[in-house]
Picture 1 (tube, rainbow, N blue to C red):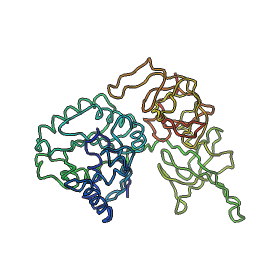
Picture 2: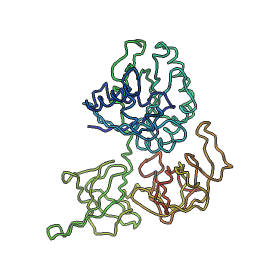
Picture 3: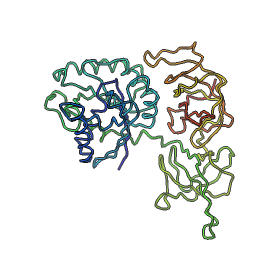
Picture 4: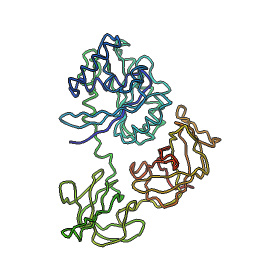
Length: 418
C-alpha cells in the first residue's frame, strides 16, 4: 500500500492532539489497553470525557500543561493507505520541532479554532509548510460545535485564509469544518453540518494524489555503502548500496559518476527480494555497474544528460536549532548532505526572516534559536545538489557542531551563492 506522511500544525489549544486522537479512535487504529490507559488518565485528571489528546501527548510535561512540546509520531493504516502522523508543536519556541516533523511530510494539516479564525501562529505554520515544500495543505476549521455549526463562520475563515495563501507558494489547499471533540467530519460525515458537501478528513487523506509529487525526472543515487562480499562464491561482486533520491534508474541505463566524471552502464539492480529491472525514489537498492571504477560513500550516480549542480558555494534558508550559540559569519560547522559529509563555513547571513509578517530583516548579523534566515555557505568539498523546490532529498542538509556532535541547524538549498 502507498504510504502517506502528514504533519499537524496549528496554534496552541486549537485541538491538534485531540484531532489525531479522534482520527485514530474512530478509524479503530488503537489497542484496547491504550484506550484503557487514556480513560484511566482522563479520570484522574478530572475531565468529563475521554481525553483523546493523551494518545499523542506522551510527555508528562505535555499532559500537565495541555500543550504539545515534542514531535509525536503515530502510525496507522486503512485498507487504502498506510499513514505516518507527525503531531508537531504549535508554540513559537518549538519552531525547530515543527521544521523537523514536517520536513518529510506529503500533507500539512493546519488547524484553526473556529472562534478565533486565522491567528499569528496559523500564518507562521502555513508559511513554514510551504517553505518546506509540502505540496498539499488541508485546513481544518476545528471546534465548529462552539460556533453553533455556523456555515458563515467557516466560509469567512476560508476566504481569509485563501487571501493570505496568495502570498505563499501553496499548490493545493482544501478546507474541512470539523469538531475533533465530537468526531464531526473526521472519519464520519457530520449530521450537524449538512451544508458541507465535501469529504471527511480521513477520506481526503486516503484520496489525495501524491504519486506525482515525487521527482521522477532527475535520476539521483547518492552512494551510501560499497558492498564487497568476502567469499569465493561472490568474489566478483561489487555493488553500491543507497536510497534513490530522485528519478528512475533502469538496468541498461548509461550513467555518470560524480565527482570522477566517468561514464558507465547499470548492469544489475538488486532489491530487498532479489534482482529488479528498475528503481525509483525512495527505494533502497544496490546498483551494479559495468566497469570497476572508483566510487565510494558520498559520491553520486546520475544520468549523463541530467546532472545535479556541483559547487562549494551555496545559498540556503537555515533554521537554527540550538540556544548554546548563534549562527554567524565565519562560524565553522560540519555539514551532511545526502550521504556526503564535509566541513562548511558561514560566509554571510543575508537576512533573518520574520515568519509572522514574512518581512526580511536585512540588518541581522546572526541567527538565534528557532530563527530562520538566508545564509551563504562555503564547503570544503563540492556538493552534488538540486534546488530544494526541485528535489527535497538532494536540496536539504543538516549542520552539526563539531565539538558536541549535535545537530544545530537544518537547511534547504536555494542555489549557488551569487
